[in-house]
Amino acid sequence: MYSLALTTLIAAHGVNAWGTLGHETVAYIAQDFVQSATKTWAQSILGDTSTSYLANVATWADTYRYTTAGAFSAPYHFIDAEDSPPSSCSVNYNRDCGAKGCSVSAIANYTSRLQISSLSAGEITNALKFIVHFVGDITQPLHDEALEWDTNMPEQLRGGYALSDARTWATNLTTEIKTGIYKSRASSWVSGLNINDAVDTAMTWASDANAYVCTTVLPKGQSAVESGDLYPKYYNSAVPTIEIQIAKAGYRLAKWLDAIAATQSKNKRAALVERRVQPVQGNELLVGVSQEMTPAKLRRAAIGWGCGHKH
Ligand SMILES: *[C@@H]1O[C@H](CO)[C@@H](O)[C@H](O)[C@H]1NC(C)=O
Ligand SMILES: *[C@@H]1O[C@H](CO)[C@@H](O)[C@H](O)[C@H]1NC(C)=O
Ligand SMILES: [Zn+2]
Image (cartoon, rainbow, N blue to C red; front, side, top):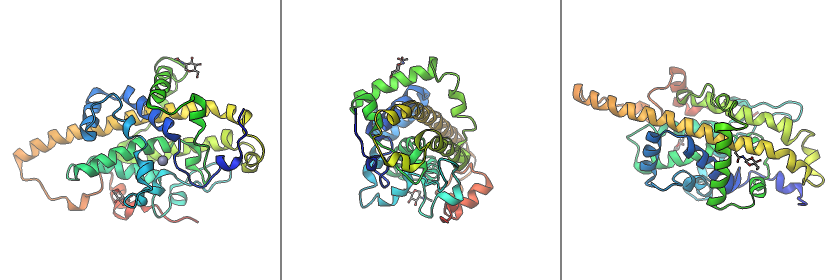
């Protein structure tokens, strides 16, 4: 039905991993799964008690990256795997993250920053908005590859990109997670999830998405999708991957935010106790990193998350 030239499919690092619809759907699925304390915590950070509090900020990062103030964040939307699909798919943090950062280092950075109560309210709000977006980006197979997938696919699949379209799609995928085709798999999507080892967890997500590049996105190599019509055959073969990846992102985002919110309420209780016992110690050295990180992670943070350079 569509005759789509491959230039749209494989363009330079584009606008928007999943398109507006995809990111908003991820956010709504997360809203469906977060604990009520997490909801209260996130709503207060965002100053939004509406029923779309995460969905309303889901695409902010894609606008911010094009502003002067936000240009630094452009590399945070992806990690460019320098692998060789379709014969070999892999993501390697040191090889692929890049000196200016990537989705993996960004998820780690903003997960830490979201827990630093001494940051300004604006910085904390941005950290949450970044996480809502990047947990979506990282499940998009070609945001983990030096190529870009067609960002309009979700919108073509669902027929619109209004918030109400996202809500409808999210309700479908949430039901599939709770009682349907994803029920038996959902726990594996969040296995090993650890906000104190955010690089490792985000790398697991990036590798999981990257594997689809070899099996689904470019099974016959890049040249095969660069010539000929993508629709309907290629498009149809990609639909199940799009749906499961959106579902995964929403479910992971919920569990990730639950874990951060739990730390925050625990820290608040600990801080209250500590204040009663002794004066709060200066912690300048820890600014920018979680105080619960491992020594190895603290060292990595101290050298700017050690993204390394590309080969
Ligand atoms: C979700 O939507 C698909 C079609 O896109 C449909 O086959 C499936 O039955 C729906 N699932 C639920 C739980 O409504
Ligand atoms: C972490 O986020 C802050 C605020 O956006 C940014 O200034 C800093 O460069 C980031 N650090 C890393 C290592 O990504
Ligand atoms: Zn993005």
